[in-house]
Image (cartoon, rainbow, N blue to C red; front, side, top):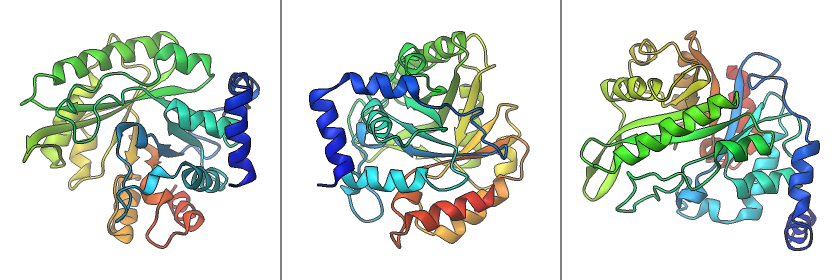
Length: 289
């Protein structure tokens, strides 16, 4: 066991107040867009939804020490502006001092566990707006699967609208990640056609009493210009599961030229690249900005 990991484990066992103390003294980012006006946020909220796979390994993200090592490498690279995660991951990073000067987004709804029959009922089991504010973070992230063939979607929509309202009241960003989805062969699957993504954008943009603090986290799909034309809200591109790195980076670069797009939110494709070189993958992403 490495010394940094032992430090985290010992602090959790003997000094749980160290987490709040680290949050209180942490240097915050001046802007979520960083010094160069573009965001590169490293996402690691997948485990709390039981989505542990990366590449060909279905349990790649299950080793917390290895995940923290990779996160530390990624967050330490020049040009990386922030992190996104659930409380357990972000608190580990706080104890390791890895969030200094970064923008931080707390993941809010993780109740729609991957593969569960209740996946479309994505309850808010993670951060709430008060918790995000109390930790001096910059905003909250909401996953919004819109499944017209599942009545549980109504609960997710209502919870998402409430979260947008509560974050806006505190002047915090709501980073909404919408997908149009449907049940196929017993699984909830996202429709990544341009038309479906456009529909999801229009629904997500209209959540809550105000959209002043709402940003969108969108997949890069064909005909991305039409997708981005559906909203005036700031957009961050999501990385998702990447099988062809060259094609993914090319699509990100093209989409980044659109005035709506303000950066990237990428997780597994940078933390678990095919060649294992986290630093090189992150540096390549930074170069696109």
